[in-house]
Amino acid sequence: MAGSDTKERILDAAERLFAEHTYAGVSLRTITAEANVNLAAVNYHFGSKDALLQAVFHRRARDLNRERVSLLAEIEARAGGRPLPLDDVLYALLAPPMRWMSDPERGLSVFVQFLARCRADGTPEMKALLDRDVRHLHRFVTALQKALPQLAAEEIYWRLHFSLGMMHYTITDLSRLEAISQGVCDLEDFEALVRRMVAFAAAGFRNAPPLREIPAFAIGQTAAGGVAGVQAGMDDERGARQGAQD
Amino acid sequence: MAGSDTKERILDAAERLFAEHTYAGVSLRTITAEANVNLAAVNYHFGSKDALLQAVFHRRARDLNRERVSLLAEIEARAGGRPLPLDDVLYALLAPPMRWMSDPERGLSVFVQFLARCRADGTPEMKALLDRDVRHLHRFVTALQKALPQLAAEEIYWRLHFSLGMMHYTITDLSRLEAISQGVCDLEDFEALVRRMVAFAAAGFRNAPPLREIPAFAIGQTAAGGVAGVQAGMDDERGARQGAQD
DNA sequence: GTCTATATGCTGATAGAC
DNA sequence: GTCTATCAGCATATAGAC
Image 1: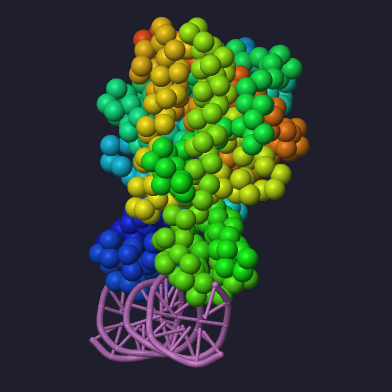
Image 2 (image 1 turned 30 degrees about the vertical axis):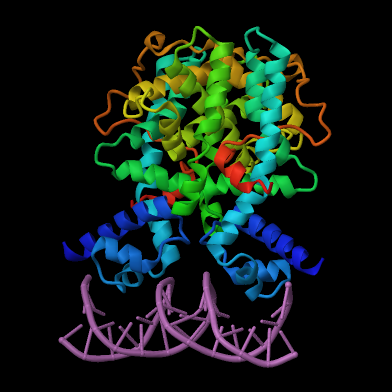
């Protein structure tokens, strides 16, 4: 038990710390201290910090993939030859990571956050690991086209991108919504969250007009200095005041 | 010119490198080499690496805030006392960072990515800096309520969150869409991108049903091992195969 | 497998010449 | 303001006792 347990404890600690503090932001000393193992154990069991990162990834990626395949298959089977129900396809796309996030034992939850953090990290190894998920997304493109046959492929891609953004942001920045809503939104009810997310995305897929029917916006075209800037993570009144030089 | 130019060059280099490689992932040596200045210049001009980070933030945050305020004001003025047009409010929320992203001189573009990266970074200083943007978002909550008076506050918060996710993800992970669409989507046309994004979000705001009218999903409730898992950044077939142990 | 001790290099920060 | 030289500390990784 001893050896295997050490390995698992290292993986757990690394997963959690990487998810919270970035790959470069966590040292092996921090990881081994958190895992209550000796510093040298990481290099003994994994070879290097980089190899540890990949081990954290691969430990759960297999289960994730297996579960995803079964869910997709279930939807196709239910539909028979009929067009796929849009809401179900979007549910298959968005629900699984949300379920992982709500894992009461926190293990899967941490892994999902770890993966989201990996996307944000700039290390080449990370990129290489994550840039391989394109093939899988093509399954969803196909499924979405079966659900909305009249929609052009370009529109499918963009709306899929927007839907992934909703999910990704929910994984990484739910704390921000907490700060905004100040208790109005129940952030613990992941079942309701998934239903809201699917409904919002489905409405976008179904009801957004194609590009040619969207009018150009006339706002903010006047001022010489360009248009207002507001951004997800930074347009902060106090921050901007601090930044002001007058 | 010499001193001020050095400061600017350091800020430019730090902004770019932090955006790409994380705060912890970039050393002062890398920054000063990139900026073609002496290593000691950072500590002379800014005091510390941490202070440099904050300086990068504050350099452009003021302009960002100023532009945002003027755009919001323009929309309110155009509406007079009438209810605000939903699409315009969403345009005010989503368009500015997209415009910054499309800055041909790349300076503003890098800053937006820098800010998105800050959100992903776990350093306490970052968190403190970014957690102050809540007040500004309340303006948009109010504006959205004026645009959709019948919508409950809870729904407004969630849909605002989803819309911010679309924008945030577009800033950080547009390369993924490029990989998926393989040339079908034009990622250079930010004006079209903004129109698509606003249209998708507006459709979600307008047409998504409230929670009580969204049916629960029956998929994936059967298997003992839980439901499929698919996530934005990781469900990779090859990766999962590598992770498999059989 | 687990530990201590250590090798080697890079980190942020500073002192002091110019 | 800019440079060189250097500090003290921490990083990853490894060698070798137990």
